[in-house]
Length: 129
Image (tube, rainbow, N blue to C red):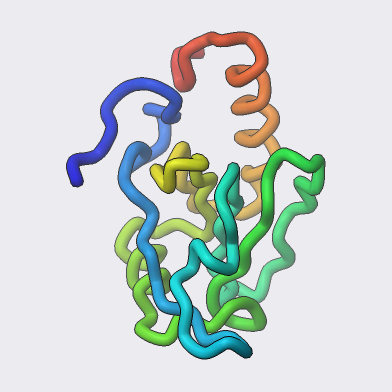
């Protein structure tokens, strides 16, 4: 699928508008697709291999999902390769699975999420400021 080039994506973030990968995750139920465990809605996808603590964005509007490390086990390492390919530690993913913004620094996630909430609640185009 082609990436999005406009709409609710942060054009100031490299590779925003791409689909987030759909890895297979080892679970107590067997191997399942990520969406089955992470659900839908806004998600903060974190590369768990960094060993860094994910920022606490627990405001009820976004779910934090840690992939790799001490988090969910990506059986084919698809998410790990994706994070490596882009040089990101974290990605804010839209309910339709497109990336709003990928971030090299896990500590900037809180700021980007606050900016996104302002965009969502104001109707201003993302990445325009």
